[in-house]
Image 1 (spheres, rainbow, N blue to C red):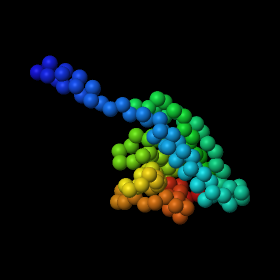
Image 2: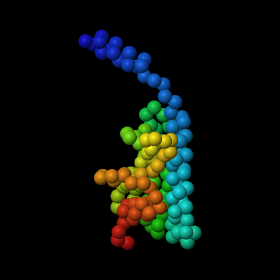
Image 3: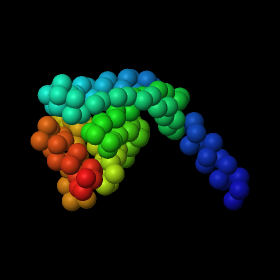
Image 4: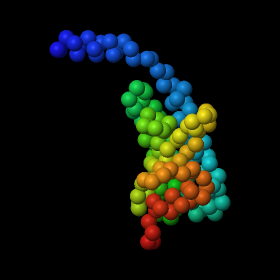
Length: 151
């Protein structure tokens, strides 16, 4: 029995395809930076009025199959309250990547999805019943949802 398991696992190891994760990682990093640029443009007027401040921290992610890599975390500061957009990784079930939007009143998941019939990627806000596209309006609603209601 033990020999059969060893034989099976050895064959399984030989069958494992070699995957070059670098192109996927580069697309993930580019998509995160494009998301941050979109958010900055959505908040541009508020940034100019010093109502909102944006800063970044570098995180090191260590994902299975991929060497550790550095990625930026976006911090959105409104008064004394901060919302973090914290990348969680590119190896996600049914998605290309995930960022958690973390505020004082909760956390929402942003999922990078690939359309079935194209190479185009789209960010979605994941909620329990359905996912919906990340736009300026849905981002504003999500930001309000994770921030404190009482000042």
